[in-house]
Structure formats: structure tokens, C-alpha cells
Length: 145
Length: 185
Image (cartoon, rainbow over all chains, first blue to last red; front, side, top):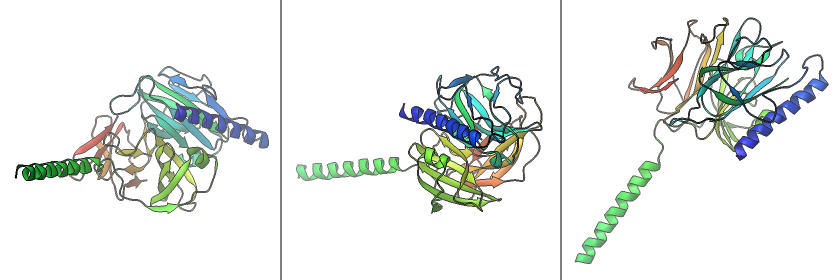
């Protein structure tokens, strides 16, 4: 429980940091981004969408366009991990622009961080998390500019 | 005489139990990392503060990237950074619980990409990660299960930027004998 609380607090901290950056640099970062919000976890299914024109029409949630510097994802076992401690869903988390989507995969519960430079991208991007395979992923995602 | 035999038998039993316990407590080759790297002090930023890093080790520099093992308050993390900024961590993966384990001997830090909007099709942009001692190579698999790329592991790190452009659908680990010891998904 403490670990979960710590991660949610970190996500909140990320959003706060993004907001500070946004206030300091309004022309470069309009806001931080959290999904489903900055204090709870949401369920990512194959049909989930943030309905804002993500790379994939279904199974993906993404931020708006901005100069993002960090995307952080916290993933839980919910509704249950298997014998190998794998969650029911594999996610692709990272960034996308109008030409491509890039990121890393995980099926494990834990906390995952990625920067645009880690995936060889930069400039105006969307932060994204995609349900790649499996049934469902319980996640909290947050991006900071 | 009976007391002496009983004492010897008891001592022998205790020795066997102790030896068994000691052996069982040693992690197997898929659950340990022998490369302790070079301990470094990371520059403090929001990421390192929130990860709660107790100790950071630079395991290797390969192909223009630096690979780290971080010990945090919530367990080990694997991370990638830039060799010209060794005190700054980039992407970090912090699985819940211990790493490595026999069930999860590989932390795949690889970057995948797609230029199509068809979900399920992805290729490698860069192949890299951290493995347990018992992993000799990491294989990247085509959708039909055949091997598209094999990357050898040295010092618990695998890394290459020479990757095929074809679709990748899974990752596997093999031991020195070529036996597959792990696969995802």
C-alpha cells in the first residue's frame, strides 16, 4: 500500500513539476498530463481511448502535443498477476509524433520512466501508453514538460 | 558408546542441514548479477529523488549508451543514460519486487517503433537491456517465432543498434548451452 501511495504521489509530483514548468515556459509546455488523472489508476483495455487523435484509434491514451521531457507510468497487478508475477496486459509506453510511435514494452508491475531522448525523439510530441497485448492494464501515466 | 554415536549422528545431520540451507540461500544463475560495475553518484533531479536511489552502479558503456543498475528503496531498477553524462539517468525500469529472478532474468530496455497505425506491428529501434548471470544471449523473435536477431550478453548487459527492420513479436533468453530459459510474451 505504501509503495502504491508513493507512486501515486510521484505521479502527482510529476504533474506539479509539469505545471511549474508550464507556468515558467508557457510557449513550450502548456501543461502536465496525467491519465486517468493525477491521483488514481485507470484501466487500459484494447478499446480504451483518450479520444484526442492518438497514433492508434483504440487501446491507447496519449497527451496533447507539447515539448515533453518525461513520461512516467505506474502499473499494478490488478486484477491479478500470474505465477510469474506478470500482469494481464503488456503495454508500450513512450512518445509519438506525426511520423512514428516509439517506446519500450513491459508486462510487469512497477514504475517505468522514459524521456524523448531515450527513444531518439525530440520536439513537439505526444506522451503515450498503449495496451499492446493481453486483456487489461491498470496504470497511472503522467508526463512532464 | 551409544551416546557417542548419537552425538556424531546429530552433528552429521546438523552439518547436512546447514549445508543444504546455505546452498539453497545462494541465488541461482538466473537470479543474480555478478557485474557490480562502478559505483557512481548521480546528479540529483526529480527522477532520482522520487526513485529513492540508495546506490547506483554503472555496469557498462556500449554502443553510445551507459547502462546502470540502481538500488532503490523499492528494489532494483535498470536504467540507460548517455556516457558523456554518466551522472544523469535516462530511461529507468523499476519492476515491483526483486530483479533478476528465474521468472524474470531479463530487463528489456529496448526501444521499439512503428510507422504504421496498425496495432500489433512493431520493429526494433535499439536492442538493449540487463540480464542475470545465467543469460548468454537475448533473442528477438519474429511473429512466427523464429529468431530475427541474437544479441550476446557480456557483463550482464546486451546492446546493439544494428537491428533488423522486420517486425518483432517477442523476446527470449538463452543460456550458454543455447537452451531457452525465458520468453516474453
